[in-house]
Image (cartoon, rainbow, N blue to C red; front, side, top):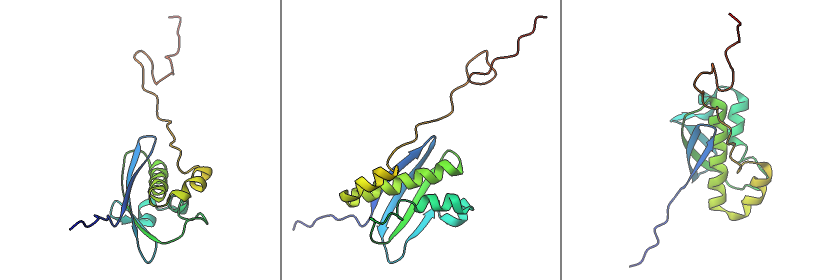
Length: 135
C-alpha cells in the first residue's frame, strides 16, 4: 500500500529585524489569524498592525480562506507583524506558485535586514562619541 502522506497545512518562516515568525496555514471556512495563542486583534491592539498581518491575504489574486496560526518571538510589535506577513506570503507561494509574482510585486517576500548596530568599546552608543573636553 503506497498512500501519499498529505500534510493538511503549510509551514513557512518570516523574519524582519530580530523578529521571527513561524506561520502555519490551514484551509478553513473563514479566515482567522491567531498569534501566540491569541487573536491578531488582541495581540497587536492597533488596527494598523493587525491589518499588516492580513495584507498578504487581501491581494485580489489570493483565493480561498485560511486559518493562520503564528508563533512569533523577538523584536517589537511592528517587526513581528511584518514577519507574520512575510511568513503568510511564503506559505501562500508554497501552496500556489502563481501567487509569487503578485506577492513579490507588493513587496511581501522581501526581508528587511536592517537591525541595530552593535555598540563599540570606548563609545557611548554604536557611533556616538563622548564629548571632547579640554580639561
